[in-house]
Length: 79
Image (cartoon, rainbow, N blue to C red; front, side):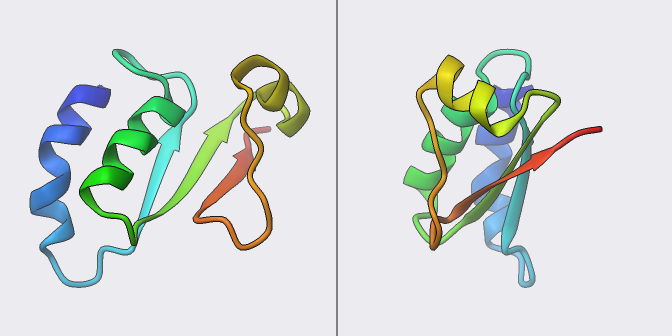
């Protein structure tokens, strides 16, 4: 649940060794990109992987989002 993740995020970031957030694109509440945007406000240094069964082109078309080289957001396509 996206809202639960947002609520837990500050406590998780306070723990040593937490450097990466993996989010599914389709989640209850908010989608993964919306959740990522809210989490990035809480920790601008956070790195993200968005995972989806959609391919990169479909995500760009549906959500108007494309990650670029050097971005703090990366995409992992599910099989």
